[in-house]
Image (cartoon, rainbow, N blue to C red; front, side, top):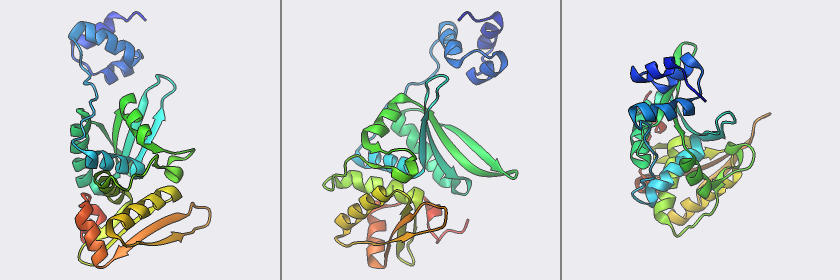
Length: 250
């Protein structure tokens, strides 16, 4: 598609791709094609840079807990998002820094307001490469939160499994060191089973498990540990989201 002189002028002035898109209505991919010709390459490529299996497990645990994906039909973008409550902004900063190291690119960050108050932080990537990474390790049918699970659980891969469990606890769990208590909840029955098996393998002790049922809502599968076993697990996985501990007042 041939662009207008207006687009060329905006590119030369250093206007962002998003703003040029809003002003002129031209597709971002078309704008970027000409941007590269005029100013050189701007968009930084994604690179997968996990130092070890523990970091890979942590990312996948975070996505399994609080992530989403969709493929935009208009421009075939692969959209990956991770949602963090605004009250967890310290964890959002930690995660943003981790994502920058893992993918060699800063995620886009959006803040959603509810009743004029910030309520949600969204970390956003558009990347087929990250999508393929996720789909190589996780699977789900229909609603992701209800069916997500690891494609293959290898109990011998302790490094990966402990990172995965950390990601789950940091997103959909809670822990309280003084009272020696840790728990994890999910509406995915298979994910709860996998978390149960990881914990049992690590501690040689089964966590308590129960199902919370509410009218017109999906069953909530919960695992919990108390006492010395809870402290042992906390010490092993080293959770990073301090807002998930009842010892912190927010």
